[in-house]
Length: 180
Image (cartoon, rainbow, N blue to C red; front, side, top):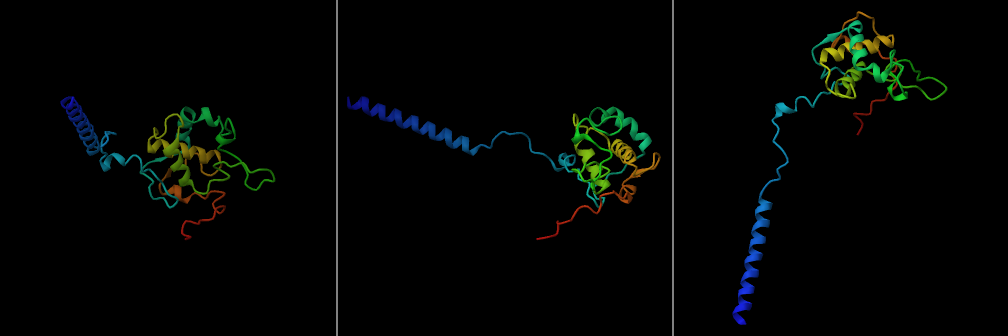
């Protein structure tokens, strides 16, 4: 009986040792969650175009060129003339000074034309974000700005001219970014 208890105790010790060894071995391993990204692979994620124009890429377009991009990529959600299929999709018109709730559109609310570029490049079309080339983004924002009466049909929009566009609500925001 003593030998049998001794064998049971040895078996328990061996089992505990095996569990402990396995646990320590698992803790020493790193989780297999994917591959380490090289810095170059992150370039497509940092696409911010700031109000001062930093981050705007090379490229250009006109409203007349952007009309086709708009018709094929944007019209289904934003309507033929930018009127939208719901209040969140409206691009044209609006009035921040109305007695009723203001209608916020590109032409009435957005403070910088660079913000339009930034948003369209990163988030549109909603069904395939980041799928437009930089040239297509310049073209389609030229068309959206044209529909809002802010640029001419054949005016070239690029990273330099985009900074010159005076948005109707450019003074409607307070910059608190430097307040501590």
